[in-house]
Image (cartoon, rainbow, N blue to C red; front, top):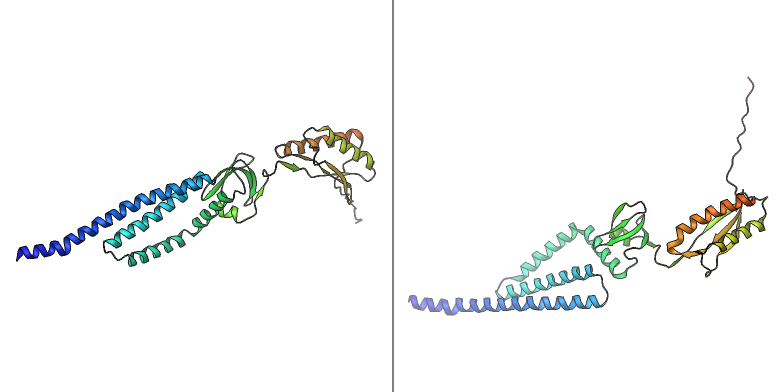
Length: 272
């Protein structure tokens, strides 16, 4: 009787369970190998498209994790585990985690968009999220910038991608816009000729597009010229500063005034 019970247990329970366990183990090992192979192929394809290395590794890890989750669920299902309840628990946990990390997920999504579409790159001078500086690092969750006075600023990616981005370094050339005022009693033609001469003397100013000097406005206390030369982006600030200094010195030497707002105050003493 004992032999019959043992044979029955062996044939009806132990052997089928061992077969299920072996099949589940094969599914897990084969699935893990396939997950690794698919992940490696995906990473190679992403590398060929020129995608950022950090994003390639991050997306590759996510893909591998998802594939392994599918493999584990398939192996558990082969063992007879009720995976429906397991999926429901995982879904609820995923929703809770997503709600708790919604800001981080928003920064992550924005970081992916910044890396994929590249509105700027490392080394560019940009204005974004109310801050201007040179981009030092574009991460998954935040971007690191360095200001002109050497401060490091860390900005969440959602604030950058969700607002206006001004990339100062995107174009090889920039136009300097200056407004130079002279007095109404000064010689208009002489002032214009001096401005054109000053622009022509600076080799850093480009010939094409040609620099422009035009009368812009008859203001309340001055006649304003619009002075607009084109320079290489790297020369913008040095040329701008040099032009302002040169214009002031030249106008002083040639007797051309540069008006500034003035106010006359008259005091009257009332009689007792």
